[in-house]
Image (cartoon, rainbow, N blue to C red; front, side, top):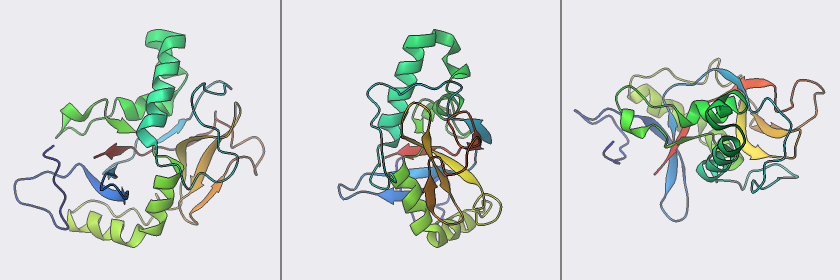
Length: 191
């Protein structure tokens, strides 16, 4: 990973993601070129210590990697090498690395709500970028998916995001939206 960004594919450089958010400080996050499937946020109901609870839509939460690190650290302290069984979405993104960039393992994160909101606001440009690098456009099935965010509401619920509408939900559909629900997971990488 050379850390470069380009509007077009550069010869000899293998992209690992598409930029989906850039903050006022010039730092940002790139979305992985592939999803990791549908996973549970957690298999237990715990209000994660040190993870901020958003009581309303987390559109100002851009702390993808801080949130991920908080959950990873908490779960490892509780369960050691079995932690991945209790927080599968977080451990899958944490252990992810594209085959072309294995050195990025441990650097990928579950997107925070603000990053997912940015994806929706910029979905046309994101799809155009994916097309430019000959990757599958995500406007189809993936856009109709429900994605997990790393933003938490409380011990029972975390925020999930409807990619097709850009809306967030926490518990408007009983029994299928708590932390144990399996929703789409796609990592981001901070730069």
